[in-house]
Image (cartoon, rainbow, N blue to C red; front, side, top):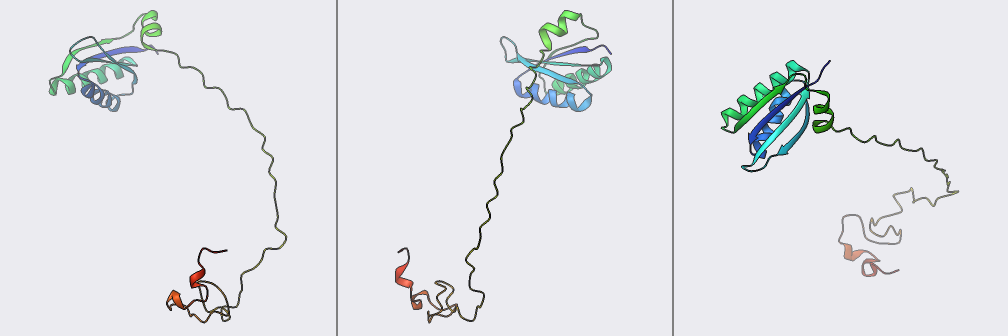
Length: 154
């Protein structure tokens, strides 16, 4: 299928972005780019696609820009010459290099025996120091803990 080129020139970058959005939603086209022209803040929107899609997108974008009083010009070139699309509009993207696989050595370390926390909760009365000899009961003021003045000391 032969590609078609569509050009829409509007006044202002914000309007150009809005028109490009409306055109992309109206038809199946590819946005080639936005190009600022010399003077007056005009911006050209370049799109490609099949002839019917580009015509529909350009007419939608032109009416959208005209409603906002920013339409400058619009043109659809149905089957542009080979040199037009290949040199001035469509640039070939650089191929993305394939990632090389990396071998990672995984080393599993198993702790032989971990010290277990005391399981009998009847022996521990203080939830701050976990010392069975502490007279403080859970919910009481921290000042009643045996270790209350020793915070941060080793």
